[in-house]
Length: 127
Image 1 (cartoon, helix red, strand yellow):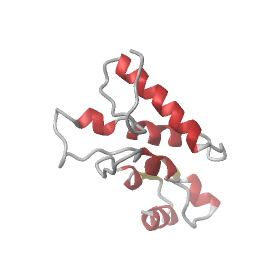
Image 2: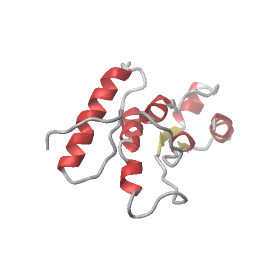
Image 3: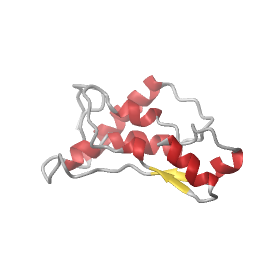
Image 4: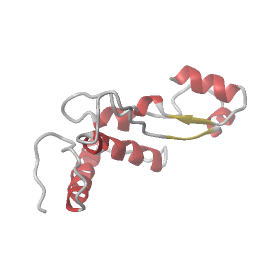
């Protein structure tokens, strides 16, 4: 992943990172944390090369999902990637604060009838 971004930006091209946000790689118990911890600028490029990284995207592949579970697989994982991408790089985030925000956001999605998975294990929402 990092090698490709390094080579692309070294050639002077803009880059959009997606490999660390493939949402179909599932684990149990708060697997959103690995998506949040991905740092798009953690490659050994120059400041000019890092300016060429224009963002990232969360990707969902269809080998293990269908219309019955795709939304639950995407959320809250994509929410963690979105918070990471929309936050300033120097903005220090305590992982426990992120856990709390994702719990609140998941409940918000459920109130809007978006069937998001619980981000941190069993929990409850006041609907």
